[in-house]
Image 1: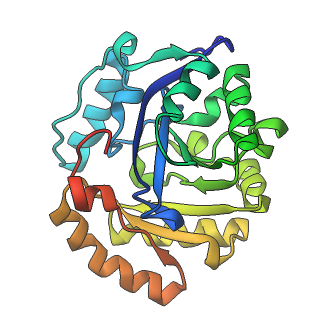
Image 2: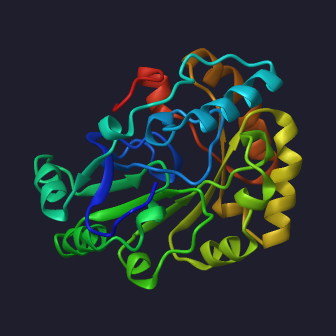
Image 3: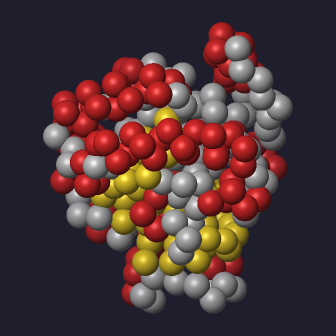
Length: 258
């Protein structure tokens, strides 16, 4: 999706609690931007990026290969799911919530790091005392202005089990960049125990401190989350990693905008 640099491509804005990572449980306003440069088969926000038949076919092929089933493999209408909004329009919506913690998410929000409306919005929020954390896949290095306006970086690198090719999911320069940022955390989504070797190799390859690493189970139902959490917690204990639950799945399942 091409961004014109005039308005933000916004998918949805809602108030909830942060469900993942080191801020889990914190009341937060979510600004979900549309568009993504990666396409994970297990993604629970496909409505932010699955806008073409070719992407849908790619996901269907991968899911079939894995022997998995999904009920949300469909092409979404970009004109319905993505709204072009100005900083003023978004700010008005954010001011409707009694909360000054913003989660900038997607999709992949750094795709719009050069958008002047987004930069203006983040600047105003900083002046108003907002704490802004961002959810990113860590494959894009944003500009310095954008970086200065983010308080916390929740980097979720994608591994082989996501279905993305290594050349697009693993960018060495990006790992080095995000590793050095203050307030950065690395949250890996774990589909099965077989993923651990790859995660350990990545951590060693890029020198990521174990104290900055979180492992989170891939799950779309409460039952699946509980089942995977039991063995993943033990892996975290063995490696001195943090465990990340998915509170929104625990509380609401795969419901949207919760």
